[in-house]
Length: 237
Image (cartoon, rainbow, N blue to C red; front, side, top):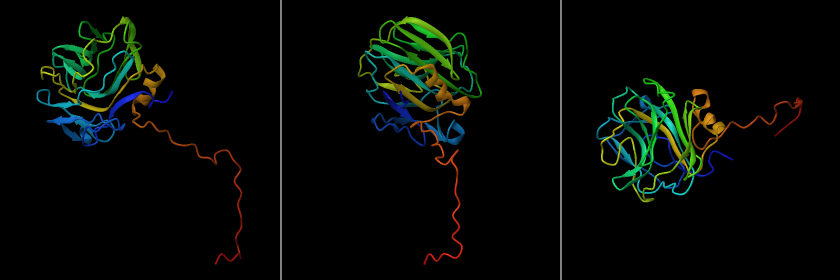
C-alpha cells in the first residue's frame, strides 16, 4: 500500500493548519506561532501551553476502523502535567487521544483506559517522531512508536466510544486543561494501522518524510550505455 492510502488528514504547518490532503480538515488557529524555528521540515507550529490550540472541526472520525496518528513533536520540557497532542474528546466521551504524560511518556486514552509508552520516554530538547497504531476498533493491537521503532505493544485495546462528531483539537484538550507547551510539525491521521515499515519510512532516519510522500525518480539513463553524436560541420539553421 502507499502511505497516502486511507489518509484522512495531514498538516504540514507551513504558515497555517491547512489540511494538505485536500480532504478539507483545515484548522482554526488560536495563538499559534509558525516559524522555521518551530519546525522539523520547513515551518512548524509553536504552542504556549495555555491558550494555544488548533481546532480541526468535527470530522476526522475513525469510528469502527483501525487508525494511525503520527507526527513530529519537540518537547521543551516535561511539565509534570498531561500535554495533549491530538485528540477527539469531549466531556461526553472520547474516541481517541494522543498525549505526553507527566513523566514524559507518549500515551493513548480511549475514554476509559490510558496506555503509556513506559518503555521509552519522549526526549526533550529535540525533535522526536511519535506514532500510535491500532489494528482494529475492537480488541485491536495498539503499538506505540518512538523515532520509527515500536517501543511497546498492547493487545485487546478498544477505540473509544465517543461521538463521531466530537470536535478534534491539536495542542490542547477541548476544555483547555492540557495545553502542549512545545512544537508540532508534519502530523497525520489514517483510518488504517500503518505497518512498522511505513512508520520507519515516515521517520526516515530522523530526516522525516512528508506528504505527499514522493520519492526521487530514478534516472532513466542510469546503467545504460550513452552514445555521442558528432554534429561538427552540420548546419542546424
